[in-house]
Length: 144
Image (cartoon, rainbow, N blue to C red; front, side, top):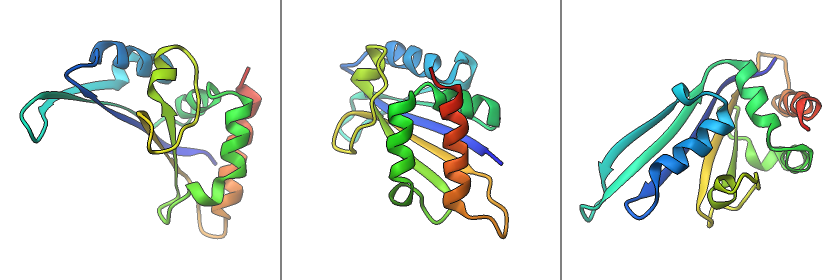
């Protein structure tokens, strides 16, 4: 099977360079046309940007995930049960500062990060965990 869709989201404050963040997300997903910037205001009135990228193509999702590298993919694979929700969505975060520096690192929710979600295609009779591991195994084969 594979991914039904991949979504990445991050919020940029007025002190951050939203274009630099959007470029980093574009590099990760491989297509700047898939990246959206939405200007908004925070609760206190300052400008913020909601930066997101989404693809419904399994090939793009797989290629994007493979950029995490074998070590990060192995970490995801070993924590699949904790990262999957009841809707067959795999959740993980990539450090924002590290991404901007060109390094991909999985981080905890308490760090500034890009929130990533992969909705997996799972049909009746299939194991969500096994399908997720299979998807991650495919990504490992593409990883450098």
